[in-house]
Length: 237
Image (cartoon, rainbow, N blue to C red; front, side, top):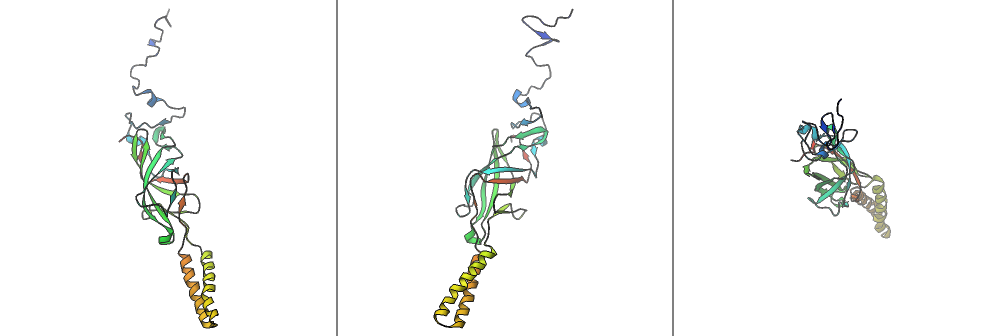
Protein backbone atom coordinates (compact mmCIF):
# COMPACT_ATOMS: atom_id res chain seq x y z
CA UNK A 1 0.00 0.00 0.00
CA UNK A 2 1.37 3.43 -0.89
CA UNK A 3 2.18 5.70 2.04
CA UNK A 4 0.51 9.12 1.58
CA UNK A 5 1.84 10.77 4.74
CA UNK A 6 3.91 10.18 7.86
CA UNK A 7 4.47 11.96 11.16
CA UNK A 8 7.69 14.06 11.42
CA UNK A 9 8.21 14.41 7.68
CA UNK A 10 4.90 14.72 5.90
CA UNK A 11 5.31 13.94 2.25
CA UNK A 12 3.01 14.07 -0.76
CA UNK A 13 4.06 12.48 -4.01
CA UNK A 14 7.67 12.54 -2.84
CA UNK A 15 7.76 16.33 -2.16
CA UNK A 16 8.28 17.56 1.38
CA UNK A 17 5.86 20.39 2.26
CA UNK A 18 7.50 23.80 2.31
CA UNK A 19 10.09 22.83 -0.31
CA UNK A 20 10.04 24.03 -3.93
CA UNK A 21 10.38 21.61 -6.84
CA UNK A 22 13.77 21.36 -8.48
CA UNK A 23 14.25 23.84 -11.32
CA UNK A 24 11.63 26.38 -10.08
CA UNK A 25 12.46 30.06 -10.60
CA UNK A 26 14.76 31.12 -7.77
CA UNK A 27 13.91 34.84 -8.05
CA UNK A 28 12.73 36.53 -4.81
CA UNK A 29 9.13 35.74 -3.97
CA UNK A 30 7.92 39.33 -4.28
CA UNK A 31 9.10 39.49 -7.91
CA UNK A 32 7.18 36.29 -8.76
CA UNK A 33 3.94 37.31 -7.13
CA UNK A 34 1.28 38.31 -9.62
CA UNK A 35 -2.34 39.30 -9.27
CA UNK A 36 -5.14 37.36 -10.89
CA UNK A 37 -4.78 39.42 -14.08
CA UNK A 38 -1.01 38.92 -14.40
CA UNK A 39 0.16 42.43 -13.43
CA UNK A 40 3.36 43.05 -11.49
CA UNK A 41 4.88 46.22 -10.05
CA UNK A 42 8.24 47.03 -11.65
CA UNK A 43 11.15 46.65 -9.24
CA UNK A 44 13.95 47.82 -11.54
CA UNK A 45 15.37 44.33 -12.21
CA UNK A 46 15.43 42.50 -15.56
CA UNK A 47 14.80 38.98 -14.20
CA UNK A 48 16.23 37.58 -17.41
CA UNK A 49 13.58 39.22 -19.58
CA UNK A 50 14.36 41.38 -22.64
CA UNK A 51 14.47 45.11 -21.93
CA UNK A 52 11.65 45.73 -24.42
CA UNK A 53 9.24 44.07 -22.00
CA UNK A 54 9.79 46.98 -19.61
CA UNK A 55 9.09 49.75 -22.14
CA UNK A 56 6.19 52.14 -21.67
CA UNK A 57 5.72 52.95 -25.36
CA UNK A 58 5.92 56.43 -26.97
CA UNK A 59 2.52 58.05 -27.37
CA UNK A 60 1.32 56.84 -23.95
CA UNK A 61 -0.76 59.56 -22.31
CA UNK A 62 -1.23 59.91 -18.56
CA UNK A 63 -2.38 62.48 -16.01
CA UNK A 64 -0.19 64.22 -13.44
CA UNK A 65 -0.85 66.89 -10.82
CA UNK A 66 1.30 69.94 -10.12
CA UNK A 67 2.96 69.98 -6.71
CA UNK A 68 3.43 73.76 -6.57
CA UNK A 69 1.83 76.95 -7.89
CA UNK A 70 3.00 78.35 -11.24
CA UNK A 71 2.64 81.97 -12.36
CA UNK A 72 4.43 83.44 -15.37
CA UNK A 73 5.04 86.68 -13.49
CA UNK A 74 7.14 84.91 -10.86
CA UNK A 75 8.65 81.92 -12.72
CA UNK A 76 12.27 81.96 -13.87
CA UNK A 77 14.09 80.01 -16.56
CA UNK A 78 15.68 76.77 -15.27
CA UNK A 79 13.51 76.85 -12.16
CA UNK A 80 12.75 73.32 -10.98
CA UNK A 81 9.26 71.90 -10.54
CA UNK A 82 7.71 68.50 -9.96
CA UNK A 83 4.47 66.71 -10.65
CA UNK A 84 2.97 63.45 -9.37
CA UNK A 85 1.42 60.76 -11.53
CA UNK A 86 -2.31 60.15 -11.09
CA UNK A 87 -2.45 56.85 -12.97
CA UNK A 88 -0.17 53.84 -13.55
CA UNK A 89 2.47 53.72 -16.28
CA UNK A 90 2.06 50.33 -17.94
CA UNK A 91 4.74 48.42 -19.87
CA UNK A 92 4.61 44.98 -21.50
CA UNK A 93 3.69 41.68 -19.82
CA UNK A 94 1.62 43.45 -17.16
CA UNK A 95 4.61 45.27 -15.63
CA UNK A 96 3.81 48.77 -14.40
CA UNK A 97 4.69 51.69 -12.14
CA UNK A 98 1.85 52.51 -9.75
CA UNK A 99 0.34 55.99 -9.55
CA UNK A 100 1.91 58.45 -7.12
CA UNK A 101 5.51 58.62 -8.38
CA UNK A 102 7.24 61.99 -8.74
CA UNK A 103 8.43 63.43 -12.04
CA UNK A 104 10.97 66.26 -11.82
CA UNK A 105 11.54 68.90 -14.47
CA UNK A 106 12.57 72.50 -15.10
CA UNK A 107 11.25 75.63 -16.78
CA UNK A 108 13.10 75.78 -20.09
CA UNK A 109 11.55 79.12 -21.05
CA UNK A 110 8.95 81.55 -19.73
CA UNK A 111 7.34 84.71 -21.12
CA UNK A 112 5.11 86.96 -19.03
CA UNK A 113 2.04 88.67 -20.48
CA UNK A 114 3.69 92.03 -19.86
CA UNK A 115 6.54 91.13 -22.21
CA UNK A 116 4.75 89.61 -25.20
CA UNK A 117 1.03 90.11 -24.60
CA UNK A 118 0.42 86.39 -24.18
CA UNK A 119 1.96 84.51 -21.27
CA UNK A 120 3.74 81.24 -22.11
CA UNK A 121 5.54 78.47 -20.23
CA UNK A 122 7.81 75.81 -21.72
CA UNK A 123 8.09 72.75 -19.42
CA UNK A 124 10.87 70.18 -19.74
CA UNK A 125 10.49 66.87 -17.89
CA UNK A 126 13.78 65.31 -16.79
CA UNK A 127 13.35 62.23 -14.61
CA UNK A 128 10.92 59.88 -12.90
CA UNK A 129 11.81 59.11 -9.29
CA UNK A 130 10.96 55.53 -8.39
CA UNK A 131 11.72 53.38 -5.35
CA UNK A 132 14.53 51.70 -7.29
CA UNK A 133 16.12 54.84 -8.76
CA UNK A 134 15.75 57.69 -11.24
CA UNK A 135 14.57 57.06 -14.80
CA UNK A 136 15.06 59.57 -17.65
CA UNK A 137 11.85 60.71 -19.30
CA UNK A 138 11.01 62.68 -22.44
CA UNK A 139 7.42 63.93 -22.49
CA UNK A 140 5.28 66.86 -23.62
CA UNK A 141 2.25 68.57 -22.13
CA UNK A 142 -0.79 67.79 -24.28
CA UNK A 143 -3.59 69.28 -22.19
CA UNK A 144 -4.27 71.56 -19.21
CA UNK A 145 -7.46 72.69 -17.48
CA UNK A 146 -9.06 76.11 -17.87
CA UNK A 147 -8.63 78.66 -20.64
CA UNK A 148 -5.07 77.73 -21.55
CA UNK A 149 -4.06 76.36 -24.92
CA UNK A 150 -1.31 73.97 -25.93
CA UNK A 151 0.91 74.28 -28.96
CA UNK A 152 2.68 71.00 -29.65
CA UNK A 153 5.15 69.89 -32.28
CA UNK A 154 8.90 69.98 -32.91
CA UNK A 155 9.10 73.79 -32.74
CA UNK A 156 6.62 74.31 -29.91
CA UNK A 157 7.80 71.83 -27.26
CA UNK A 158 4.34 71.62 -25.71
CA UNK A 159 4.26 75.30 -24.76
CA UNK A 160 1.38 76.32 -22.46
CA UNK A 161 -0.22 79.65 -23.40
CA UNK A 162 -2.39 81.97 -21.35
CA UNK A 163 -5.19 84.12 -22.70
CA UNK A 164 -4.50 87.24 -24.72
CA UNK A 165 -6.63 90.36 -24.92
CA UNK A 166 -9.95 89.84 -26.73
CA UNK A 167 -11.47 91.89 -29.53
CA UNK A 168 -14.26 92.94 -27.16
CA UNK A 169 -11.75 94.23 -24.61
CA UNK A 170 -9.88 96.11 -27.32
CA UNK A 171 -13.08 97.68 -28.70
CA UNK A 172 -14.13 98.85 -25.26
CA UNK A 173 -10.70 100.32 -24.68
CA UNK A 174 -10.86 102.09 -28.03
CA UNK A 175 -14.20 103.71 -27.17
CA UNK A 176 -12.86 104.91 -23.83
CA UNK A 177 -9.70 106.19 -25.51
CA UNK A 178 -11.71 108.09 -28.10
CA UNK A 179 -13.72 109.81 -25.39
CA UNK A 180 -10.60 110.81 -23.48
CA UNK A 181 -8.85 112.01 -26.65
CA UNK A 182 -11.77 114.20 -27.62
CA UNK A 183 -11.95 115.99 -24.29
CA UNK A 184 -9.07 118.36 -25.06
CA UNK A 185 -10.61 119.46 -28.36
CA UNK A 186 -14.02 119.95 -26.80
CA UNK A 187 -12.53 122.15 -24.09
CA UNK A 188 -10.84 124.26 -26.77
CA UNK A 189 -14.12 124.36 -28.76
CA UNK A 190 -12.27 123.06 -31.79
CA UNK A 191 -14.20 120.33 -33.63
CA UNK A 192 -11.26 119.33 -35.81
CA UNK A 193 -8.93 118.98 -32.83
CA UNK A 194 -11.58 116.97 -30.99
CA UNK A 195 -11.99 114.57 -33.89
CA UNK A 196 -8.25 114.11 -34.30
CA UNK A 197 -7.81 113.61 -30.59
CA UNK A 198 -10.58 111.03 -30.49
CA UNK A 199 -9.09 109.06 -33.38
CA UNK A 200 -5.59 109.08 -31.89
CA UNK A 201 -6.85 108.10 -28.44
CA UNK A 202 -8.91 105.26 -29.86
CA UNK A 203 -5.99 103.86 -31.86
CA UNK A 204 -3.54 104.00 -28.96
CA UNK A 205 -6.01 102.36 -26.58
CA UNK A 206 -6.92 99.65 -29.10
CA UNK A 207 -3.32 98.70 -29.80
CA UNK A 208 -2.47 98.64 -26.11
CA UNK A 209 -5.41 96.42 -25.17
CA UNK A 210 -5.10 94.13 -28.20
CA UNK A 211 -1.53 93.28 -27.20
CA UNK A 212 -2.27 92.78 -23.53
CA UNK A 213 -3.08 89.40 -22.01
CA UNK A 214 -3.37 87.76 -18.62
CA UNK A 215 -0.60 86.11 -16.69
CA UNK A 216 -0.71 82.32 -16.90
CA UNK A 217 -1.41 80.85 -13.49
CA UNK A 218 -1.59 77.15 -12.69
CA UNK A 219 -2.43 76.33 -9.05
CA UNK A 220 -0.97 73.49 -7.03
CA UNK A 221 -2.99 70.36 -7.75
CA UNK A 222 -3.82 71.38 -11.33
CA UNK A 223 -3.95 68.41 -13.70
CA UNK A 224 -1.76 68.14 -16.78
CA UNK A 225 -1.98 65.48 -19.47
CA UNK A 226 1.45 64.30 -20.62
CA UNK A 227 2.46 62.21 -23.62
CA UNK A 228 5.67 60.20 -23.82
CA UNK A 229 7.88 61.24 -26.72
CA UNK A 230 10.29 58.33 -26.20
CA UNK A 231 9.97 54.92 -24.58
CA UNK A 232 10.25 54.88 -20.79
CA UNK A 233 12.08 51.73 -19.61
CA UNK A 234 11.07 50.59 -16.13
CA UNK A 235 14.44 49.04 -15.33
CA UNK A 236 17.44 50.18 -13.33
CA UNK A 237 20.21 51.64 -15.48
